[in-house]
Amino acid sequence: MEQKVRVRFAPSPTGGLHLGGVRTALFNYLFAKKHNGTFVLRVEDTDQTRFVAGAEEYIVDCLNWCGITPDESPQKPGAFGPYRQSERKASYKQYAEQLIANGYAYYAFDTTEELTAKRNDQPNFLYGQKSRMEMRNSLTLSQGEVDKLLAENTSYVVRIKIPENETVSFVDMIRGLVSFDTNLVDDKVLLKADGMPTYHLAVVADDKAMEISHAFRGEEWLPSAPIHILLWKYLGWEDEMPQWAHLPLILKPDGNGKLSKRDGDRLGFPVYAMNWTDPKTGDITKGFKELGFMPEAFVNLLAMLGWNDGTDKEIFSLAELIDLFSIERISKAGAKFDFEKAKWYNHEWIKQSSALSLQSLVQGALAEKGIQVKDENLLLKVIDLVKDRCNLLGDFVDQSTYFFSSPVEYDLAAVKPKWSPEKAAFFQGFGQNLTDGATALQWEEQFKALAETKGFKPGELMLPFRIMLVGGKFGPGVFDIATLLGKTETQSRIEKSIVAFN
Image (cartoon, rainbow, N blue to C red; front, side):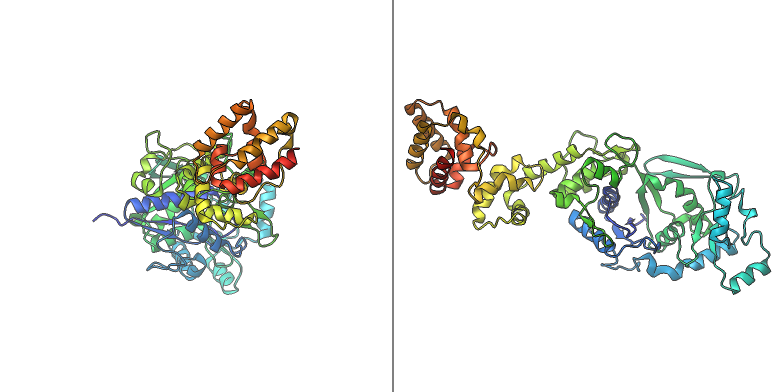
C-alpha cells in the first residue's frame, strides 16, 4: 500500500517569519497537495528562553495570508496532537531514558562553570568521543554515584553517544546520497536541564508520533542529519523514518551567504512575510504584505527561489504550482534574492488581476492616506486605468489620488516659463465646449482641432493640461483621465489651475 503523505512545517515562535521559512512551508504545502496528503503546522516551542509572546499567532496569520493554511495545527487539531512541543513534554523523557538504558545516550552532570572552563582551556572544545571520558557523566562515574546524583535532583542533561569511526549515510531527495563521518559529530544534548527536549530529540519523536512521511527543511539543518538518523535507528524506528529533503538556501543579492534580516535592513527591503512588532521594544520590522505585495505574487516569487517547472514560464498561481510541483525540479544550489525581481512579480500579478479583485486592497491603501472612496464604480475604472503603472499596492495611492480629490499643488516650474494669456484663453474655451458622455478619443480630437485653430501645436498644450488635472507630470493618458473625471470636474480643474498658473 502506498504511504500516506504527511509533511510538517515546524517553526519556533521566536519572532518574525523569514521568507526562507515561508518558502519551506510552501514547498511542504505544495508537496502535500500534489499527493493528496496532509500539511501539518507543529510549533517547536521547547526553547522557553527564546519564546516570544504573539509569535505563534503571527506565524498562523502569515500562512493564512499566503493561502497555505495547514490541515492540522494547534488552531485546527487532528488525531496527532498536541501540536505544540511544550505540550508534549512528558513523552520525551521516556525516549531519553530508553536511549540511556540501551547504551546510546548518557547523563551529563557537568556544571556551566565546568564547561566554560573547559572551553576556555580548549578553544575548539567539542563534547564528544575525544573528551567525554574526561567529563562528569554517567560514562565516567560509577552507577552508585549516578544514582546518588539523580536521587539528589542534581541538574543534568542527556547527551547522545555518537559512535566512533562510522559513516552515517542517507539519500536526500534533492542532493542524492549524503554521508557523514561520525568522528566529526559531537555528542549533542537531547534533553535539557529543565526537562525539555532539544530540537534533535523532539523532531525525531514528533515526526514518529505524527507519522510524518517526508521532512523538508533548510540546508542549514544538514549537519544535524546524522544525529537524527542515528536517533531513528537507536529508538528502533528506522523503518518509519521520513524521506529527507534539504532545501537550498536563499542567498543575499550578491550571492555571498544566507539572506538575513540585517541584509534587508541594510539594503532597504523586507525579509519577513508580514510586519513584526517586537513585544519588548515595540520596534516594527516591515513585511512584504504591508509594503504592498499581493499574497499571490509573494508565493509565486518564493516558489521560483530554487525551483522551476523546466520552462521559461515565471508566473504561476497556487493551483498551477500544486499541479506542476516536483522535488526533482528543486535546485541544489542556493538562490539569490533579487528585490527588483520580487517587485516585477508583484507588478505582473497586479496587471493580470481584475479591478474587482484589487478593489478592497486599493480601497484600504487609499483609506490609510485619508482618502475615502464614495463612488466604487469610478474606483474600478481607475484601477483598470492605472494598474499597469503599479509595482506595489501603495503605488495606487500616488497613481489614483487625483481622481478622488483635486490637486492642491501644481508643478508650476514645468508650466510657468511657457505659460501665456493665449494658452489660458485656449483652455477656457476648451473647457466650456466639453460635452458629457464623450469618449477620450472624441475629447482628444476636439482638443487638437481647437489647438490648430488657435495656432498651437497640441504637444505644447498636453503637459499643462495634465498638470491641471493631476498636479504633476505623471499618470495614464491625459484624455483617459479627463473622461473619467467627467465634464464638470474637468472644467472645474481647468478654471482653478488657470488662476494658479497666471
